[in-house]
Image 1 (cartoon, rainbow, N blue to C red):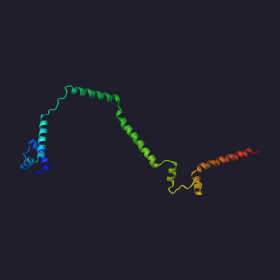
Image 2 (image 1 turned 90 degrees about the horizontal axis):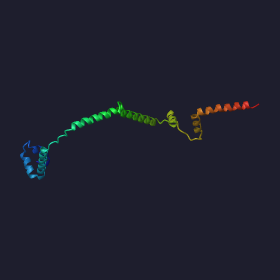
Image 3 (image 1 turned 60 degrees about the vertical axis):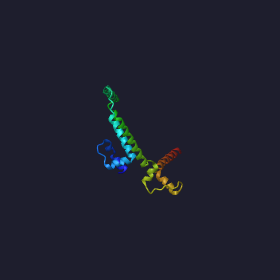
Image 4 (image 1 turned 135 degrees about the vertical axis):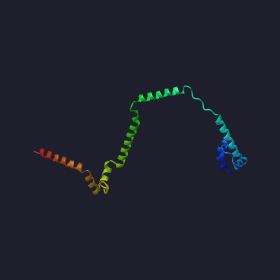
Length: 162
């Protein structure tokens, strides 16, 4: 027999539940490592048989009940809705996270919005004819308000002449 096979049988051999086969006995006689391991297991099991669990303190139950009452009093002192604080915080954090990711991905801003309106829109160099036309197109509302101001100055000039 090999050492691995004997190691599998060691718990049974230590308890003497199964009689050792002649091959296992031969291996244990020839292999001092396996024989030593079997002896250590038997000593450990003998110590465990002698061990007795300690008895709990006679006041253990009394102290346990007092501690449970204290914890229940603390829980009731916190309030009826104390359990909702953590889930509410988690919900708020989740909503803020989703909102920030949404705004980041949407790219909210005037430059992104202009690019999203027309995908063929390419920004030309400022001062070039195409750039000037794009500036006029982009700022049409602003320039239309200037026309109103021009009309007011013309009317003031007409009213000012005698």
